[in-house]
Length: 460
Image (cartoon, rainbow, N blue to C red; front, side):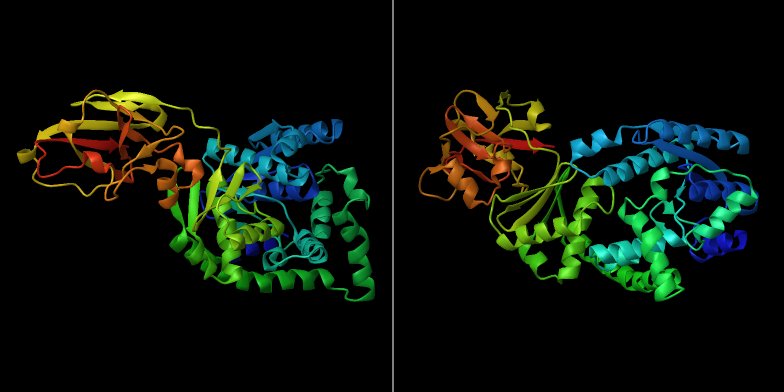
C-alpha cells in the first residue's frame, strides 16, 4: 500500500516537499489510514501533517465518540488536531440544501479555516478505489453527464485524494495490521441508503454474474472520461473569461446574444462557473438548476428571475443575464445637499461628488468621462442636491425637444428596474440636472452665452 500511495502521489503530483497537509479525519477506516500513512511518510516526503474533524451533530453520542477517537489518535501520533461541532441539519434547512450538500459545504469551509490557520497548502481526504467505482455506478443509475461519470478526481484545487488507487479491502487490512481500530458508522452496515445498497448488493451481484473486475472497469471508465471532461472544462473556462462582465461587487453578467452562440456543453459550463465565481465554491449548481437557467435564458423576458442555492439569483435584464449574490432589499430614499467648491461624501452611494465653478475662459479641455459633466451655472439658483428617484420624476434629456418621464427614459436606456433606485440624480429645486452616468438636462447645458461653468464629478 505504501508503494501504491507513493506512486499515486508522484503520478498526479499531489504533494511536494515542505507542503503542510490538513487531513480530513472522520474516524472511519479510510481517513484513519490516510492520516497514519502520511504521518509515517512525512520525513520521506518532507511534509507536515495536521488533523481536522467536523462533528455534524447528526448521529448523537456516536458522533461525539468519533470526535474523541480522532483526538486520541492524533495525540498518540503527536499530530496537532482541530475539532469543530456544527448543526448541519439547521444549516441545510436555512439554505434549502440537502443534508449531504450542507455537510459537504460546512466540512470544506472548516477545512479551509484550518488550512489558513496553520498555513497549509493541501486538504487530504480519504476516498478510495471502491468509492470511485460506487460513485460512477450510483450516478449512472440516477442519470448524469460527463462530469458525473468522471466521479472523484485525484486533485481539485487544494483538495487531494492520495488513496484513490487503493481498495477498501487493502485499507481494512492496513487498519488490522497496525491495530488502528477505526470507528464504524453503523448506517454503512445496512442497505437503507442508496450508496449502501450499491455497495452491499449491486456490486457483489455484478461481480458474481457479469464481471469479476467490475470495480476496476468502472474506475477505468471514469479515468477515460476525465480526459475529455478536462478538455471541455478548459474550453468552458476560456469562454467564461471572454464573456463575463464584472459590473459590481457580488454581480456578474453576460450578453444573452453572446451566450446563445455557444455550444450547449460550453453554455452549461459558463453558467456553473458564474455560481462558482460569486460563491467561491465548485459543484454548486445541479443539472436541473442549470437546465432551469437555460430555460430562463431562452425566454429572454426582462424581469424574470430564478432563485438558486446560497442566496444566488439569476435574472434577465434586457439583453443581459445577470447573477447576483444576496437578497436585494428596498433602497432607502436619500437626499443630500452638495456644496460648490467642496467634495461631499454621500454615504448611501459610498461615493463623493466634487463641484467646481469656472469662468468659460478657464475651461480649455472638456472631459469625456461619463462621470464628469458641465452645466451653465448662471441658470442654477439655490441649493444643488443629490437624491434618488421619486414617483412622477421628469426631466429634459439633452438633445430632446421636451420633458420625459424619468421612468421611460431609464427604460429606453435599458436600466434594470432593480438598479433604478440606486442611480443618483443631481437636482436644482424641482429640476433634474443630471441622471448620473447617463445624460444631463438640455435646460442646463453649456451654450455660447454661458459665462460661468459648473463641473460636477462623481468620485468613487
